[in-house]
Image 1 (cartoon, rainbow, N blue to C red):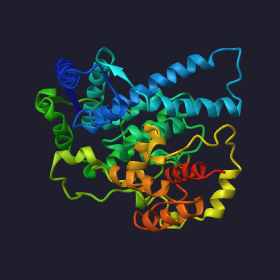
Image 2: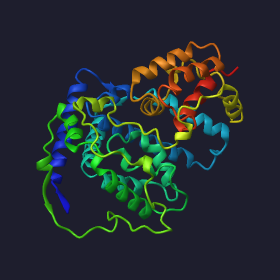
Image 3: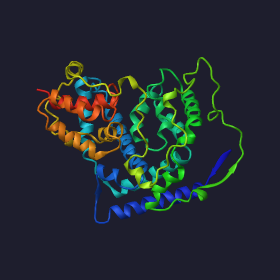
Image 4: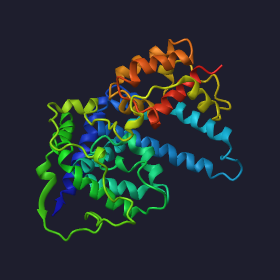
Length: 368
């Protein structure tokens, strides 16, 4: 069955939603900051899709900059300088209404699609990835996916190189068939839009019509050559999870963090000496002394990732952790604090990307 979408309703709704949001925020204000965008609406997915668009615009500008034939952008010092430049810019976001409103409109459309048709949405995301770099694209963008994210995030670090887009499309469709009964309620997700303007799902999905099965959305037949042969047992979400009682909880991350992908590292304590050896071998030329207070130094992307993946969606807990680490007298003391308060209590996977990036920042803070 294929749902017949009322595109006219979607266009009108997203336009009116964006206008109402901007009318409310820009009453007496000229600009909006990054932190304000995160709290712009009660729909966390809309907010993060706006941030995602800002990141894409930055990437486009960076690509133009790198197209210059006169400078070596592969040089490690240049790469590090550009990374730091991006981090600084991410803390200095300042957007006027004329630029924000169309981004909100697009973000609303995307949020509605990912809520109602996650397979179609995420297959569309795969199409945006550069050739041969789908996995890197997913890793870079996973922090922006807040609704039905398990339809796609299982692919990260589960695939090899050389798989084409069609293989990813089939994997997404197959995974959806396994976990669809445990995904968040569409009505609950869309209810978060209602704080601005109620969304009529029945009007949006006018009718259902029978259609031939699409070769992309069909469940693929298993074969030895397929990289998606089965979903591991620890990645299948239990069916019929306890319902979320209030739509407002979406704002504080109702989507749980999967911690079981690497159980061997969950709860394993960090070792200061081992981390020092690891991080000291990485290049930090020109980076010494740039990190002062951790609570003031995180880029928006880092703050999003740490909050979701390390601190159970609790931004206050992240702020408390950063303040406590700032007050530590040494890297060793900071590692001990992290072990005692967070690694075991929150079941951190110490080899995960999020933990490694977090501890890398802690290491840089205490560089001599």
